[in-house]
Length: 443
Image (cartoon, rainbow, N blue to C red):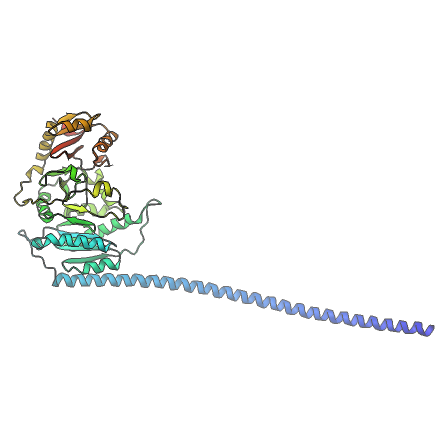
């Protein structure tokens, strides 16, 4: 019994020793694994840090690559522009050599302002060239493109009668207000650049500005030759235009009659160098045409306009999104009657003669009540005049007859001293007359 008890005790001791040895071994293994895990975590953290550093470096390099690519694109555009200038200078020497008029100067440079509509541009080019040959020595031709749309450049270069100019603006314009169309800022910048080129670099005394969606009348060039003399003689004129905003077929009759206007119509117009030198330093970032309609810039000067338009605007699609096209532009009458502008006596357009004669015509017209203007005007055989006392009253009258209702800076379209005139039922003239017009107060 004692022997059995001793053997059990010995076995228990051996087992305890083995257990202790196993625990020591396990502890040693765990410590080793913990060290390995710690080492692995450390290595992983170092690898992650190196990866992040490499990513940051790659991002920096990518940014530099993009910057270099942008610089490359700018240099390519610069090279393209310089090539254009060189080609144009070569063509200027070899192809377009207009002779000079009797005064030793050209009448005016004619520039078509273009951007990205080659089909429209071609229609305008063909219209201009149709009537240009007899007067090519007086009116050098230009196409000025805003941007690098290749279709427009190719179209322009197909016609060697034109000099080609290209405006490449590398800076994206910043709009003054959110939601504004950038196109109006680009257009204004292009106009300033092109006019500076023609008046400044090329030193023309006068420039006629067309857009790439216009056709011209057969007497377009003769008309502007007559206007050049008038602009030179009368410092109270700002410009001469070939456009009548109320020039729809139903509102015109006399192809020879011209008017003075306080409203700048644009859409085919001529400017003298001295006026440009005044306007250029303060040229606006956008909406250049409305800017020219401000009294602060017009300074009481007038614009000559015809009763029957010498340009036709076919541009239903463009930066203005076809605004008013169907109602006001599509029905415009383009003059097709011959007029001998060389023999025309235009002295009636000079002040103070014009104001006196036009005021007398207004005074002779039969007064008609604004309340029943349309009905009463239809019953009168001769000219009629209808008085309005406010912008809303004018707009109501204009809506009845279908003429332009728009005002800019207190001036209705086509107005001269508060009077808007148009034809009605043939040759009858309708005068909308402001109650504040000096023309009726002086009678």
